Image (cartoon, rainbow, N blue to C red; front, side):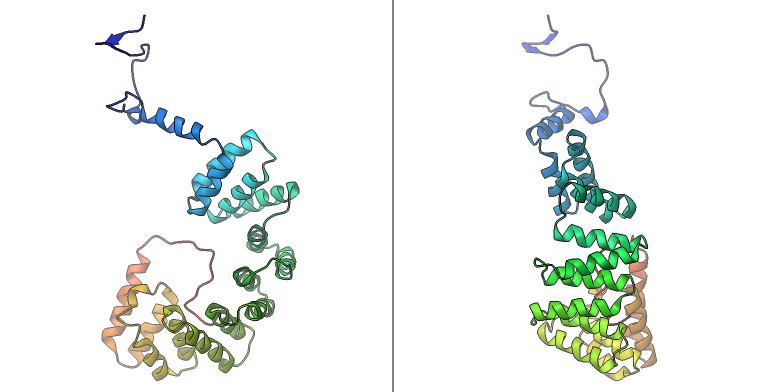
Length: 297
């Protein structure tokens, strides 16, 4: 006969509780039990892993993918999500391994193929990275966004001319996309084209998207490198101080601060230096996207 409190039955035989198992005052159910019930109600761990990946919950995505794979080691979708999540978390070797295993079960989606190729590049498997990126670049299902990712991956393995060609292909598909022209300006500089070519491409990007702060910073950085300081300052007039908090590239902030010092604009130089200090004390954020602030490194 179970012990009771009033007319309400309670289970016996448990003398202590975890502090995480605080009971719901209304129903007498532990928080842990609630979580278990929720998990049982949503048994598709593969789907949960994908949901977490989509909202950038990469650590949870790894856990749910592992739960799914414990039930079915041949779950290609779970294996793909595991690999992509591990890459996002910086575990490149494990991420590449998971994507390779997934590809043995079924072909990878386009984004996963690009991420696998970029992972190869990070692991210094440059020939494999280049060949896979170029194979994706000429596939029928590639779109503009994918081509820009491919270009970034090719630049990362020191193939700026191939990156430029991927950008050209993106431009043919989406001639009115500002980002295509901005990135093409960056790769033109990396390929050794005259500064005038990079400048024209970046200015065209600004024409297509005049409020884009990154493009303005990119153009000013380009002008600073060729010592056209007054023109660079005129572009930065719309940025500093009004939009300075939006600038996240430390290299660009140093360049801009030095520019303002060179033209005796000490107050704005100090503002840039203060913004740089603020960024340096914050935790570093890893991103797979190429820097936008500079038109050419």
